[in-house]
Image (cartoon, rainbow, N blue to C red; front, side, top):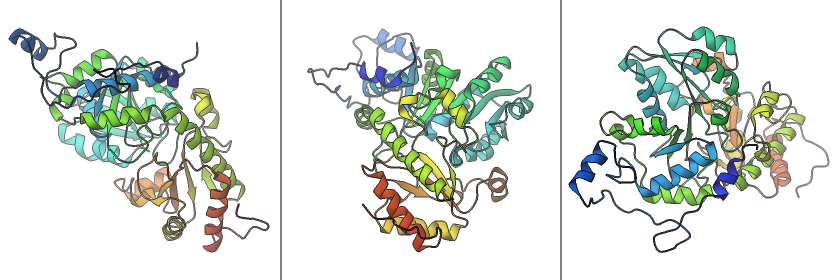
Length: 408
């Protein structure tokens, strides 16, 4: 039977301690033990089902982790206080001094900065490659390589990773394939394609309401236990713990993710096709001009579409800023970083979310000043939205006026 991630959410059943349809929130930082030996066993990692201290985990965090593992098809998961609070422990758990990482060159700016500028302090080096070229990935592997790192759909250029191909390389060289799936929850399921570890920034599509920051690591029980180990677990010792109240909130929002992703994808696909027809340089995995369109189709869970992210290039940072300011003024969205909100969000990544990447490297990877990254919202009338965006573009001479365009 085909993997249907939303079905796993549908089939989860949690009752609160008083029979509530939502599980009770564990509003405690520490937990009691009926015997001293049980406390000792828990510290040693030998007492399943016992709670020690909320930095280790809590019932609320475990509920959310179980739900996220279900949608990704992994044994379990560990939630954290941010997306970077998920990424950094994974890298530091898998790598030690002298180790090497092969990473996609087009990744979130914070992840790039961590791998480029921070991990070298621990003598962990990273080679950044064009992840779409499997021969280049394999050529970058050394005897010290421990991790292949990529994003399913890259931030911000929307390059698509061949996860099956990368998994085969990782297996051949005894490496761990770590995939950040933030841009494509439900749409792509990296673990079913061979990824060892799947990461999300819960802040984005999964939570969907831009009211909290969070992250998750999905993987095997053994790896998650290692992350939580009180003696040498990176998640436990670095302390990026999600608060139980936030975990409960994200879990409630997660239940509508399948509906939201379908609408995000529908709207983004509509706009991408319209923008391309208008002659704009448009990048979206769901249009045939995208170089990895067929690859994406071969990996996707079709019901959820091609995702809610697209980019256009309007030629210059000045034009990009003018357009974004005008669109915000017309209530078409917000000039803001992040993604996955009910309202469309747009930003110029070269001067915002990818600003950590040096300008020469931005040019090399094709990140231009005029690039605008859109996280398309849940608009009920996307045709009207398109017409209003087009009017903004015409005012700024980005597009020539089009005859017979009426605002619905």
